[in-house]
Amino acid sequence: MSKNKTLEALKHAIVMGHLDSDDEGYDGMMEGTPGTMELVETALGDGIDPQVILTTFNEAMEKVGVKFESGEYLLPDMLASAECVGEAMDILEPKLAAGSGSGKGKFLIATVKGDLHDIGKNIVITMLKGAGYQVKDLGIDVPADDIVAAIKEYQPNYVGLSALLTTTMIEMEQVVKKIREAGFNDVKIFIGGAPTSEEFAKKIGADMHCRDAMDTIEKIEGTQDAS
Image (cartoon, rainbow, N blue to C red; front, side, top):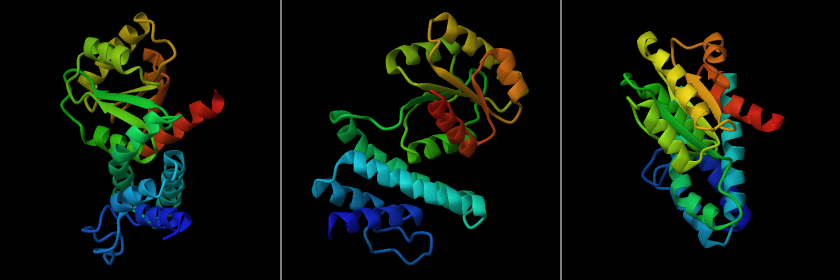
């Protein structure tokens, strides 16, 4: 298989949510054929630049996004494709780090102290990885000081804060305050969760409010375009 054909096959596998040869894919007929994981290994073995492979990931997810917006794909279909890229990024990231780049940026995410919900957060993580971002998940019930310490260590471009309860979203204000007091004024802070809003984000000094995973990615891309 030529390099171009490998990349086209990789793109198709991602669009079809075909993770590996044991997976059936979107149409239920791809079991036994090379999936995303095998094709990434093939591409690297053929000497294809990791940045080119990353571009293929992005092109595939853009196509998936179009299918989702048109109604052809539902959320589980989109997440299947994002999972393919997220898993493949675990293979690709060390190669990117050894070269000239490391993806689109680094995203630190946590559910704030007092809140034990993580379904929405985990969907955002899957989509971010699928879009080519490096993601560090601090988990649930994370104190503000731990988030600040993680920023110092991980040095992310973006921080995402999640809360599902009105009683815990108030903790977001404390986290934002401590992040800014620690001098991390260039880190973009995103908040999300059912009780949050644009107005609340402005009130506490967060940079963005995100309705869902797709909105998160669109707003990150917007901050990059504006910079």
